[in-house]
Image 1 (cartoon, one colour):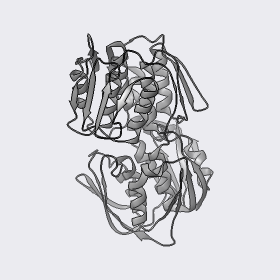
Image 2: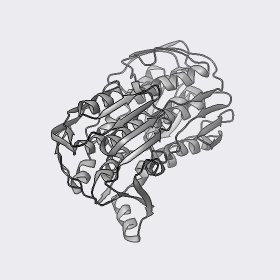
Image 3: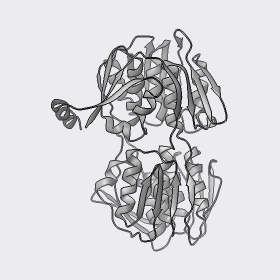
Image 4: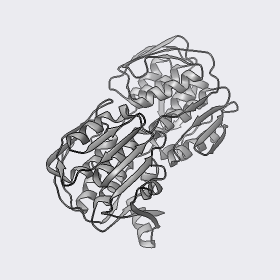
Length: 430
């Protein structure tokens, strides 16, 4: 086990290369199950979630290789083997195996997924969609059992806009008989990415990226080659870090449209942002910047995955800022850690209230989830002295080569092995 060490206060300058989208990758990999020949996915991020999903595909008989950020999957010998325990429980996105295996085998047994603990995130909309397509869904001994004699297209209205449910229903519906219509569908770029892969495999999908998706079922899907979109959350995290400590940082391999809500907020705060075709340059002005209020919303609104890193930046803004998360009510576990570092911030209901500016001090802190970890990295880069971040496994779930990328623009950041006492503390915390 390791911890992350950061010596704060160093100015950052240079170029950061953004990896492929984590939230696309975790859906694209299960989608390969639906093909009858080899699927190649390029530009994948080298993160633990990708490696775990690759191993899960091997467990059910896939011939899988992952080299140089390219995943090759031959699914022709896959079987509908139950996956009630083990790796399935290590990541939230394992639920995409439900839709993919149901779509191919008409049955699946998948353990209830794990991942970051952000409060209740029910999969009732996923199950609603599966049942509408003709599957019987039961919860038996902590695993979800899905069984269908056949899948038939249906009109499905999502009661809440859900990226996971939208993608999972797409995976189950592409080989169902007849037409499926998903209403109140999520519009995130990752959904378009998954639809692009499925279409390259031979699926018939229209409307991805709008709130109504129409799918005409096909009998078979074939292999293809697909290049994943850039990770807008990783890009946004580096934009926040550059706003905090950058002289001028160029974020490369980004689709500027995907981060427009963050770009608008940073400009509102007084940060200089220059956008190009596939790059964004961020420069911090001398002195403090303006406060801002943030409210997370479904895409194209402000992403919940960026409210935590941005909260660290707001500790340096002049005045009071309010960050409200309408997506996840429990996404404020980073607040106590920021307070250890000297931040003046408190939680009231679904909002955090940040007062600033105040100088952060290095401290021993713990990442409780992926984006909380990103928040603490941003805080550590701004703080006086040394910050030690435990819970590095959470950060590794979503940020490929974080240390190397930050070192490349001048950050003093490195990994160290945990001591014996720290290892025991980490076990107690888990």
